[in-house]
Image (cartoon, rainbow, N blue to C red; front, side, top):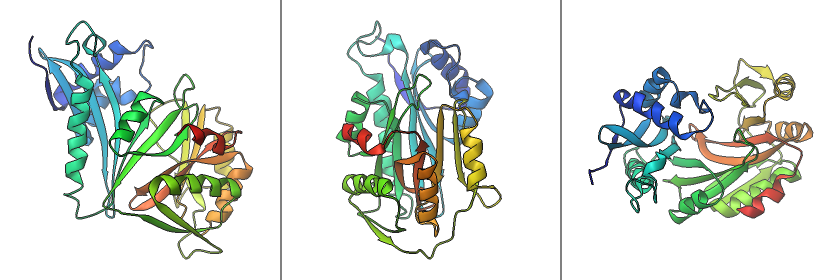
Length: 303
């Protein structure tokens, strides 16, 4: 049985990576363009961390980490773990040998080592997980549930966001008083993350009053985030609601001075908090609000 090697990917592997994803998904195109276009994949490999499993010069497995270093924090998103179907556990090749576990182990070593190389900055590592085994595996290595996105996949499946924080023993945040629905969500987060939220009448930080649409590489999602030269919140909400996109969301920094006003406006328009990202934007926390009609409180019972 010839050896399988797990190595760091380079742009030279892009053709094999694209073939791997195209061959293992029934749809003619994978919905992340950086995994189905060779030129885009070369740029993706150059800008992020990618591990590939190689067997007889063929790419048979893949795992990636979006690495985003900031001045005050570091963010790592784990994504795109895929093993060629014949090479999965129980497949025709390498039965009983988990290439996925080997890829995951290399990726885990990367961020475990990273925490000691970033001058004690907070490090957020998170992943968008399929409910079930993927979530359990993350729980086993200390990840906590940060929330759940409903109807997030092309076929309408939900994704549970699992995260782990390094270089921070406890979160303590002072926020303007939000709506009852958001307070319920923050209570869930406080229990998961050993966090304390103190609600006050006002906040000394800057306001978030303008928004722009975030770049997203899939055609059925639209998200807005704070930006000084963007549109006001009402214009942004209207454009999102009229977009016809399956998944609609806002990214809000809860430390902003007008959090109470923004939270109330989003709730009024059908946006509810679904994910809490500590240290997401250069050290500042972010809440993702998704547009939907059901109450968030009912979905967290699965976590």
